[in-house]
Amino acid sequence: MTSDAQAVTSRVADVPLSPHFGWAWWLALLASGGLVALLGYTLISVTIIGVGVWGVNIPYVWGFDLINYAWWIGIANGASLFAATLVLRRHDLRTAVNRFAEGVALFAVICAGIFPIFHLGRPWLFYWTFPYPATFQVWPQFRSTLTWDFWAISTHVIVTSLLWYVGLIPDLATLRDRARRPIVQRIYGIFALGWRGSVRHWAYHQRAYRLVAILVLPLILIMQSTVAFEFAVTLVPDWHETRQPLHFVATGLAQGLSIVLLVAVLLRWGLRLGRYIDEGDVDLLGKLVLASALVSGYLYIDEIASALLSGGLAQEATFARMTGEYAGLYWTAIVYSVVIPQLFWFRAARLSTVGGVFVGIAIGVGIWFDRFSIIVGGLQTDYLPSIGRGYSPTLSETGLFLGTIGLFAALLLLFVRFLPVISMFETRHDEHEEKSS
Image (cartoon, rainbow, N blue to C red; front, side):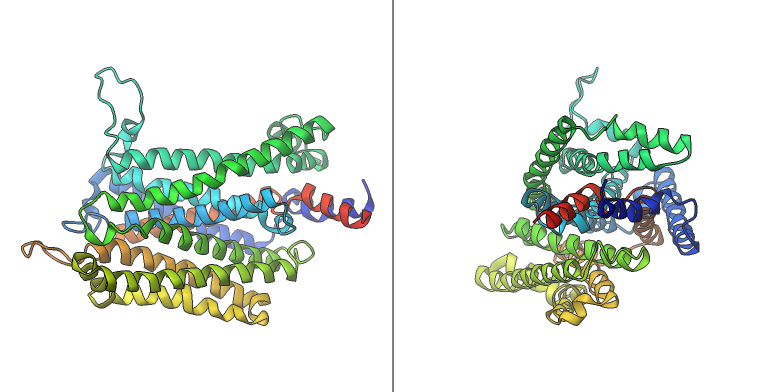
């Protein structure tokens, strides 16, 4: 191993192999662990008492559960699409961000899978959505969106896990070889699958990595479109527009990129990885976030134009979201996800750690308000005067949402602690090519 490659390996590998990680990490893990405990409490209460502890009711049969499901799926899809594209294009940016972008996608889809299961009301019977040969020949209702959720989530978890794990295998072998304690060597060795770095191993690895990345691309479009079609099969006029799948895909990409940018600047600052996540990488990420925000802005303009041209119930429902009881959510979504990212026209804002954190959080919050506006605001205009109005989340729903954020943060912190957040083999390969040229 050359001195440059040794330096790359040492700096990145020493992070997960270090016996001490500092008080800041423990403090963050403690805070996220408290939110995970809150998640457990809310899930237990929903299981014992039922979904009546939530604020949903007729006509608001969907509340925080579907809002947060769609929000987490957006993060997972955006990060997955970004990571897979970098792998297939073999872009230089992949060495800096691919590893934790894949982790963000996996952890987000885990959080998303919680909501449809507990929305069933009887989560212990979730396996009824599986197409298994039941003794009583009671098969799942394939016209039900809950069955669609099963296929979408399970496929997403499998493909995203494979993308993340296959990319990790060579680096797991590096950690195995550098670990000093036998138990640590054994753990990393098990997950390294006997990797020895032979030409045959590398050939199989690169084929598998690119194959999984190829599978991600159609999965993302199908997954986000499925979320949109779940709305389309209902009776709500505002959810029947053909623009909805494109809206979910584009805003989900903006959301995923913003979270990847947020994690990138935090890792660059917290772990002092400026050599591997350099200013050029952060600058390019900022430009991509800005471009995705502009696409989101175009879609909002298209929504208004489509409502004006269509007329009828669709126009009434759309403008009810813009001017009705939940209009503040709609306009807040535009400000946070479209207006605030315009700061990234300035290079100084793109390279600033504070700017990256601020814009990354702003877009995530803005897209969450967008999902709230679509789901709750879409149900606002009802055509039966006898049906009551108004929806407000309960403490149980709020706790469930905060708990999933804690779960996501805890998984990310554990990932940072025990696995390399930068792809060592990709970085070594790129530096070798640069030196050769």
